[in-house]
Length: 203
Ligand SMILES: [Zn+2]
Image (cartoon, protein in one colour):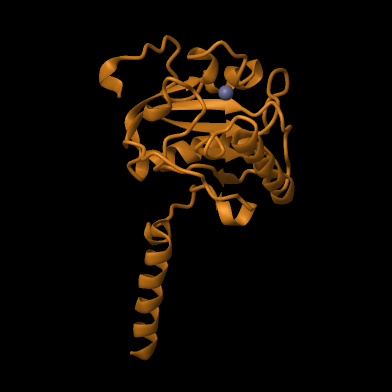
């Protein structure tokens, strides 16, 4: 009995601290490295994202290059956040999430905050960067798989519409991002939208 009370109290505390810890996990869910775990600086402000979003935008970081363990990927996250906050003058790292070649997801602005990654679509999309320069080199299979699992998780949690459009950054901006090799990969993924046209009712 006492054990049960302790367990329930633990669950309530866990839910209060982190809502996601209360949501049942599936075997295919990616592991998400939290901001605290990668050593993020606090956000300097935020705008709430209206969810579920109709759009998922894929990026590469170009710089920093690929990272293959949690230490290196955490360093890459700190580097991107530093550039975005202190050079670009943004409130936080631009992306909602990042995925490393280590197969881990790194929390950026998360599911609930508008990012800065693919204007003018920031307010109706989740932006995911695959850390690395993926112009001629293809990301490791594990990194690609983790990205797809992150999108599936977003749909399941209700942050991404089931009928979302998947695009590469270059489809809405004059950039080579996410790199030709990565773009070739996402072109074969579910919900990829080759002739993406923004419509007012997508907002
Ligand atoms: Zn991009």
